Length: 228
Image 1 (cartoon, rainbow, N blue to C red):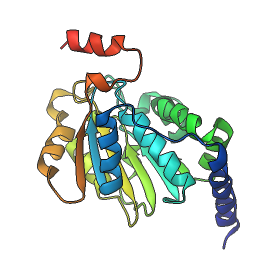
Image 2 (tube, helix red, strand yellow):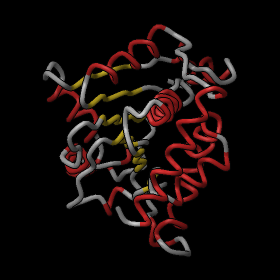
Image 3 (spheres, rainbow, N blue to C red):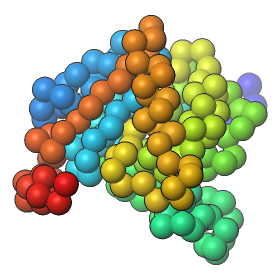
Image 4 (cartoon, rainbow, N blue to C red):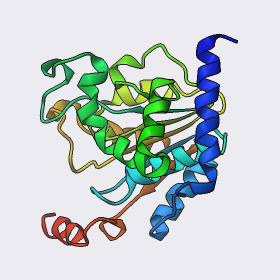
């Protein structure tokens, strides 16, 4: 076993040993409960819903719990790097530094479950990997919990590519809000199109969260309903 592998095992044991003090993800609504059940029962789960309904927080919490329970050996977080028509290229730094502003909400959610220092160690050991969607082609992820966040900003081909990266013993969650895409008109709708085509396929779950599932300030749900 290489020194790198030994270091990774040591860090993972530290994460597992946090079980006594860990935070466990708990559904705050029936829809969130069904979302968790879908992730447990399926290889791939799609989840759509408005901001604040728990799409990312539930997936991230479950991923952290599974890592601590040794159900997976790594967590892979990715998302399309496009916001309001701009991609990674306009940001300074290497790919990790470029992606950091995009994944900060996910990392903050992880801090709740694992602690800031443990998340830092797990990232350094590549047990938690933040990978730009554009860099995933050609890779395979075994025994991993994979999350494609903000998938409404991914194209049909990107989502298809992400799904074919899933390896043995892995789970994949694809979530997004179809009402808040930043893609140009001609590229929109990939997430919904794929969900519709795969609905009912064994091993694929499709979940829908609503404004009533929003666990932030209740005013958000009322605002979104009024602005429809």
